[in-house]
Structure formats: structure tokens, C-alpha cells
Length: 343
Image (cartoon, rainbow, N blue to C red; front, side, top):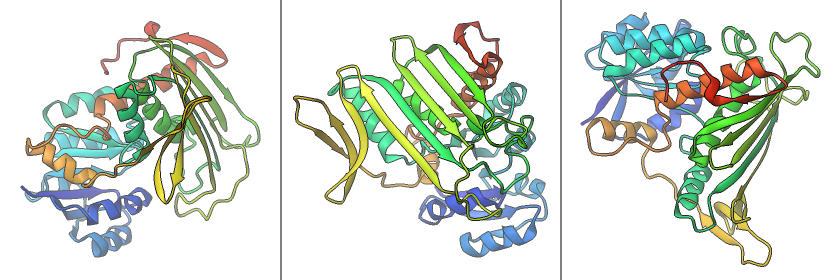
């Protein structure tokens, strides 16, 4: 079966998603809406589909089965409720919402439809390979996930640095790696430590630097650091094109140090341990786009795509970030949190 796509929000995220949509075989774009009509027209020319004058027209369109909600997080709960009440399945992006109340609204609305959240985990070959390798136990389980991100704060919108609408570097960006770390650790969070600092951008309403350590039930950890303090290069104020420094490594409980490498033109994960031969695990690219995999799941022909976080996972990421913000410079116990009904 072929599924019709309706797109609400034709900004920079759609620019990144356009190649995936164009190569998809089980979905086709039917309608697009953006308050800036010229944006919708630009992507309609590239992706096909008609330009609508309102989001409501897409929710009510008979040829639209799946709605892509590429809207800011503070507007997402209303959009999800309208799309779900019209029986549309939903794909959106991070952060799911800026607060737990909106997360609960989204969870409630999606009880009768399928919904997923596109993160950096989606179509991430390193993440997919690492998950498979750690699950086999060949080099042990993941014991330490460490990632540092350094890049400029967003200048292409007026909400990313607003604590009420988005929330700063962890909510805006490092949430990608929080989700990946939790996925690869594959264990329950028990405790951790959070810190937040302002180093070089006093004009921001949020911090410019944040660090989170999470510990799990079996004693594994993730150390996640992000800073917007460095005055690195960015292309302009119209899109998310900025100089980005990414430092990542993983260590297993058998002492293997794992990194992403290129070997003879083939990408993969390299596991290194003193006294042992290096082990290279070649990436195995997906044959279908995430949109096709989602469509196949709707058809009942495939399980839920592993590299597409569920709406429950995305809500849990928000819950964790908002919870630890009350523990700046302190250790926290995750079991002490409130009663938001997320997975």
C-alpha cells in the first residue's frame, strides 16, 4: 500500500529530510503547509504535492495518511492533537515538547494512532552497528558512552534559546545523544549528576554549557557534554549550518574501546584492546528510508523500526532533562521523580 504524506512546517528540518522522502517507494507527498507560503511552494516543487492554505486542510485531506509535523516544540502538542483526532499517523522531530504537560497531552492524543520521533539515531549507521554488536556480547556490554559536542548556539530562529519554548543546549541538541546513549546502554537509569554554566554568552536566556552523567542499574554510565560557548563559524541566520566538533567513544565492560572509523573506504566501528587484534565491524546501510519502514509497519509487514524512537521514548527524554534541571550542580536519584506516565 502507498501512503500519502502531508507536511506541516517547511523549514530547515525538511531540507534535511527531503532526500529520504524522494527515495521512498511506499509514501508520496500529497500536501504541504507553512505560514511562509514561499517555503511550502519551494518544497512542493522539489517533493511534489499541493500547497495548502492551512494546517487544518492537511488534517482533513482524504489523501493524507501520515502527517509530518516539522514545527517548533512549543507548537507541537496542539498539532499532534489535531492530527491524531483526524486519524492521521504522525512523524515529528525532537524535542518532542518543551515540558512534561505537553508530553502527556501528546501521549494521550497518540493512543489511537502510530507516532514516531526522528532523532540523530534515525539512520545512524554507528548506532545501529553498535547496538547489534553490544547485544551479541562479542566484546561485552557497553559500560561507558562519552560524547562531547561543541558548536555555536542557534541563530536561525527566535525560540531555541528560550527556556519556555525549547530550553537550551541539552534540550535543543544534546537530547540526540541522550537518546542514543540510553538506547545503547539498554538499561534503566537510576541516578546521575547535572551541571549548567554560562561562560561567554550572557545575552542568552539559557545556559551556554551543560553536562549530564547518567548511571544505570548494572553500573554503566553515559557522560554527555555540550557547549555553545565557543564562537565557532556558522553560515548565516537562515539555516542550521554551523561548524561542529564531535568527540565520541565507547568502552565495554570487557575493556574494548570503540570508535567510528573509515577503513579502506568502508565505514564501521573499530574496537581496540591492548593485547588483542582490533575488531572492525562494517556498517550495513539500511535498504529502505525511514518513511518506507514506517509505512511497512503500518501495513503490518514489519516490526517497529528500531532506529525510530517511539513517542514514549521521546517523552521520557524530556522528562529526564526537565527533572535534572532542578539538580544543577548536584547528584540526583531518578527513582525520586514524579508520576508522568511515560516509558
